[in-house]
Every structure is written in structure tokens, then in C-alpha cells.
Image (cartoon, rainbow, N blue to C red; front, side, top):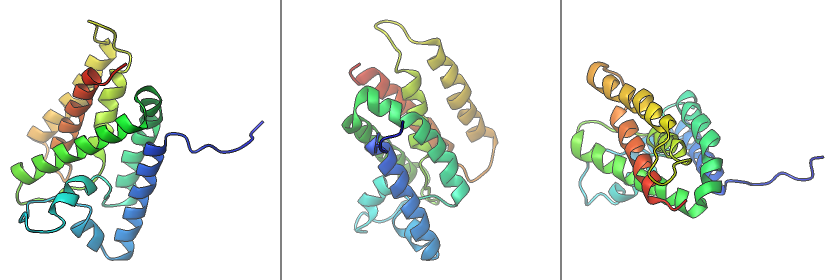
Length: 185
């Protein structure tokens, strides 16, 4: 019997809802919010929004399908990660991953902007595959995930010309791997 709805996984749910609000805002304002708040690109450090954009770019999405593709993975993986590692740890993982992917974008691709939570999704994919890791043993599923997801992104980055930031995917996955080793079990 259903008694009440619980706001489980507050970081995951809040991230998804704030990202949806950012998408709606950008659609209402003709894209101004995505350009000025929810994208990261090289700019002068005197720009007051330069530092916030290093974190906010993961909230922006170009379209509803872009948002949906990222949020389906995040909403599927995030609650389990929050249960295992705690909300505070997952929030810290999200913030670090956003910062790493934002700085890399600014330094390596000065002529382009990037937005979206795919780096966060890839971080969660790899981190969740490592959740069952035991002392001295790496789960085979982690290696398969690394080959399929990250290997595919390396190949896509080398051979495909599209509007997808494979670097964000790769860095997000690497962050997830690092967190998998660092976070207490």
C-alpha cells in the first residue's frame, strides 16, 4: 500500500529538476541562459560568470532530447550511488567532474562552447560499475564498461565530427574511475 511519496536521492532529483528549469529558462529567453550561464567556453577571467560557468555548464542542455538522454542515465544510476556513498559525496563528485570538464574545455577548445550533463552521466556509469569493487579486485563489469563506453568515445573523438563533446565523456568516466578508488566503501 502506497503511503506517501519520498524525495529519495535529493542530489540526483535536484540535479534533474534544476537542469529541467535551466532548459525551460533557455527556451523561454531565446537561448540567452544557455549562452551566458549554462555553457562553458574560453573567456576573460574578468568575466564575472567565468568561474560559475565552470560548474553551471552541466545544467544546460540544447534540447529536450539532449536533456532526456542525460537524465535517464543520471536518474537510473544516481539514487544507487547516493545510497552507497551518500548525498554529500555524490554532490562533491558532480562538482569536481563539472569543474574538470569545464576547465579542460576552456583550455583545449578555445573556439567552442559545451553544455550538458553527459560528463556527469559517464562519471556515474563508471563509478557505479566500480561500486562492487573489493580489496585487490576490479570487477570485470568495470573493464567491460571502460572498453564499451570510454573506448567508444575515444574512437568517436578521433573519427567522428559532430557536436558531441567526447572529451567530457572521457573525462567524466575517468573522474568516475578515480572516485571509485577514493570513496570509502
